[in-house]
Length: 255
Image 1 (tube, rainbow, N blue to C red):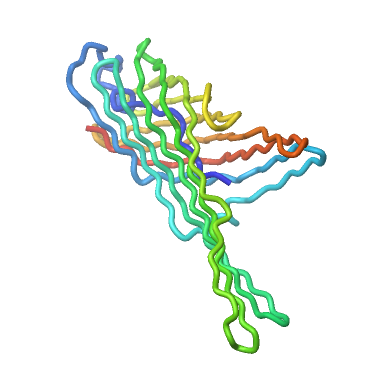
Image 2 (cartoon, helix red, strand yellow):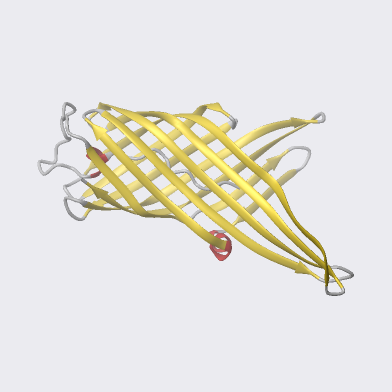
């Protein structure tokens, strides 16, 4: 299970259109910045396992939010002329607790940390189009704290780390944006991994932009992320894909 990565996004000059309605000149030599915070992504998670048996499962956003302990998501953009840099981060911690009674009374506390960080560079090849390349860091850590008692006496107190994994995928993508007026715009973002630890890493987002003022912008849209790997162990082969998709909301401050 992975936290949602933020797909390729617009840089500061693409977020807020100039008063004339025309794109900013590519020769502009001043730095411009965008900070997108707070942000919210409300995805459902669909899992697909393909091997000797076909296994599908789904986790709704309601189930995720019920177990959510902490979450944070933000995006930072900087550009100068046609060149741009971006850093995006998404982190969440999900906690759960189960108990069972019997000869041993056992309580299991589950802690799942998930995060995705993107570091990207872009180059504007057209007034409305950027080419993007960079790296995506995917982090997942699952720990189980197990407590067992026998007749009121503690007999087990153990922490088990199920997974503590860092993965890196190298991305290429595009960012297309179009402004219908000085208030309303539309953005299409997409990226795909061409190398890295995962066999499949693809994301896309359609985002509407509303310019509230020279400094403030409101974003809303829909995001899709798929990450998958092919595994071969002990003569068996199987594919695992995790798909997250759902609405997004965000507030962007541009200066």
